Image (cartoon, rainbow, N blue to C red):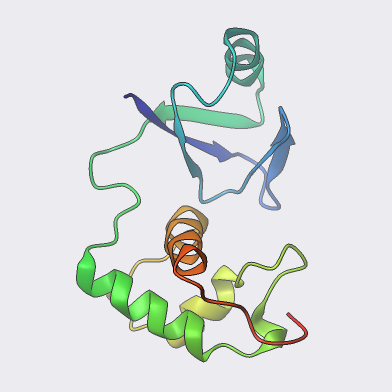
Length: 123
């Protein structure tokens, strides 16, 4: 299946077709949208769409483990209103060699939740 990296050209991100696209980008499967929605996304000047590189989201097993540990150690103030950890908070605690983007955060966090992880109270 084809994967795409869709990112906003706006620093604060951009919503289109019911999906939030941060500046760091989001991995999207080719079948995630209808043909009409893909046309709308491609026509949107506030979005950049490119084939996702094979290594996107860019977190190997060691980096994923570091990201999971960092997420586990965050307190409630380091979470966004949507319940996800803030990328900036993760960047503050992760080693410099671990690259973190919203797409990587989402992938790791969703996997953690699927395994039963719950954010701290008040997040």
